[in-house]
Amino acid sequence: MATGVSAPGRAQIKQKTLRTDRWWLAPLRIGVILAFFVVYATVRIFMNKYYWVDAYHYLTPLYSPCVTSSCVEGSSHLGTWFGDFPRVIPFSIITFVVLAGFRGTCYYYRKAGYRSLFFAPSACAVPEPHKKYTGERKFPLVALNLHRYFFYGALVFGLLNVYDGTQAFHGKDGGFGIGLGTLIIWINLVMLWMYTLSCHACRHIVGGRLKNFSKHPLRYRYWTFVSKLNPKHGTYAMISLFTVIITDAYIMSVSAGWFSDLRFIN
Ligand code: FES
Image (cartoon, rainbow, N blue to C red; front, side, top):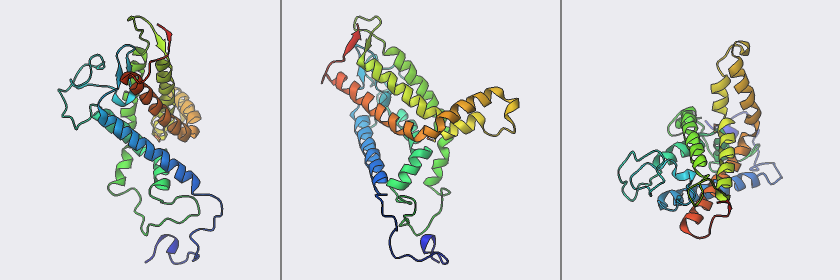
């Protein structure tokens, strides 16, 4: 039996959609941005170089933490946990799995992915091409339910990024220093934390499963804070995507010697 818009009882309309506005523009724009990010991140992760600027202790978030003995000297803040990786395995494989898992299962990116990549559906009042809908109960979509666990991982990586940020106040002569790279790293950190703390799973973890808030004043306070950020979660998701790319591209350029860091102090 036909399902979806073809199901019996539904009005049978010949046109694909009756919308006359440019409904396809938003999913197309988001799809192009997501595709660009996927290609950029894949290329960068397999590059296995230009992730560390020794003079100023800049480490790109895509390679943090760098914990194999293949990492360049100075970049392993947390020590080396593994020996040399074979060339085909990126040093940042753990970071990549956690961060890709966090973004890939994020409610905002799910909406973006369903609209822009799977056309399921592309927009309101635009029927989807799929004949069957099984929800997120089967592999691989059932894995989207792991989001809250990726959130815990993202918290740990967020703290590591803050540590990297403190290291970026490093001057050429070994003392205190600030450069354009330091500012870019910290702007990215703020956006990453806005994105992480505005997460829907975070809101549920801090304030969910309570019968009343009056007995949990601290959790109520956290929940109120997260609830203020939460409506802008999609905005933070997109801004932080760009700040990650800009931070990584800047550190790559300085590390490769394509241009020098603009220094304000030392
Ligand atoms: Fe987007 Fe959790 S819902 S990061």
